[in-house]
Amino acid sequence: MRIVGKSDKGYKRPDNQDRYLAGTLANGVCFGFVRDGMGGANGGSVASEYLCKTIEEHLFAGNNNTAMNPEETILGAIDDACKEIYIMAKKDEKLKGMGTTISGVTVKDDICTVYNVGDSRVYVFRRGVLTLITEDHSIVQQLYRQGAITEEEMAVHPQKNLITRAVGVHDEVDIDISEVVLQKGDRVLCTSDGLTNFVSLNELEILVGDNNFYDIPSKLIEKALGNNASDNITAVVMEY
Image (cartoon, rainbow, N blue to C red; front, side):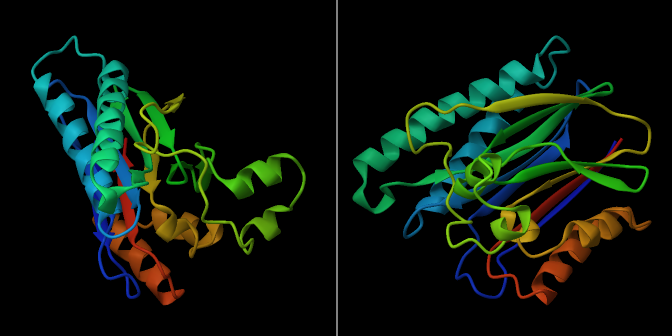
């Protein structure tokens, strides 16, 4: 499986609170995750970095264990990180309210397990069509589901950046999990909202289908910056 990722702080943010983690374990399990930190001062960076480190530690602790269950490993890592981020925020006033989104996948054989908390996203690109797999945990998504606003109104709503679920805001968090059976040639895109808020679905579809696979994250980021992105931008692309 081919994997490539890139992150950029963008032109308007002083630092990058996004993090990504991607690779292949010795037991053949592939993974890709994107996290988008939230919180004043450097809280968002602390939360996303801690979650990144915790997932990495859990994954590589069982790196040579062919019986490792990827789903149990990731859920355990997110739960452990959630508790610790919450405790850190309670102890340090400067970190109060910090948290982080997470969206990503583990792939074992042809089974792609998708994990999501917040408004980072996972898409699957198959035969020229990009399909959103995750559902945002956000105010505007709730309003849209209730029929209170249209899809077009979601993009310009004043509360579009408010999420309803994040890792570390409370000591526990609900994690959405789903599965996709991959087909040869499928591509998986994991991304922060710094990309999806500024690049249309049609633009994403064209760029994710680019023949130069290892250039895709750079081209996605360039497109977002060209569309005046005001956030950190991160993308991980995997090809089965």
